[in-house]
Amino acid sequence: MRNIFILLGPPGAGKGSVAGELSLLIKVPVIASGDLLRENVRNGTPLGLKAKKYMEAGELVPDGIVIEMIGAKVSEPNCSKGFILDGFPRTLAQAEMLDGIRDAEDLFNVFYLKADDDFLIRRLSNRRVCGNCGKIYHLVNLPPAKEGVCDTCGGTLVQRKDDTEEVIKKRLEVYKDLTAPLLKYYEDKGLLHVVAGDISIGYMMDCIKKIMKW
Ligand code: AMP
Image (cartoon, rainbow, N blue to C red; front, side, top):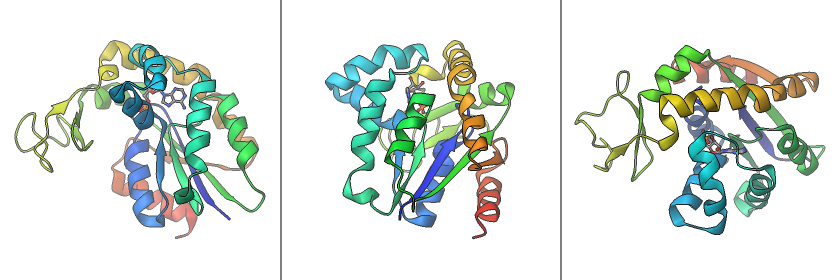
């Protein structure tokens, strides 16, 4: 029996933050497709070289590439008790792949983190990430003590190449076209829980705990 959580929602709705908190709580690993892809791009792997142009343009990396990457991850031994998916599935083909690896006894929960475009654009264009440890900052709501420097490790804060306003708008469009249809897909299966994405992470976790009756 595996405890499988899927975090759905537009870019900037807080999937990464919720995934981190959930992982601490239920002790299963996070599999974040965007982080895995960025790692491949950084390391110049063949997969990274294929993915880079799509990511910089705010488009989805082709299903075949992402499905293979996630398929390999979820079959690693540390996922034997379950895993939290952040950023996957993003298309119907990806959701069908997940259905294919799901056992009858697996617990499966899908959380939709909901927020509107203006909020997401504001949040993402102010997002900075530590290039060293990955810690996330917000220039207005969660600024570092010293400008441009990570409070935790002293690394340099950078803006993701796809966090510029133009690419954010493209990512939101792609989300609406290709990923939003998954909401109905999971709702029809009775697996979808809706949580507000424009509230603090503490409140979001409270909602999730309430839904899960933890
Ligand atoms: P994220 O960090 O989840 O915002 O993802 C950053 C970028 O990685 C996306 O804009 C896509 O280009 C790519 N990406 C991440 N996850 C997927 C996925 N499941 N399918 C296709 N492309 C993805």
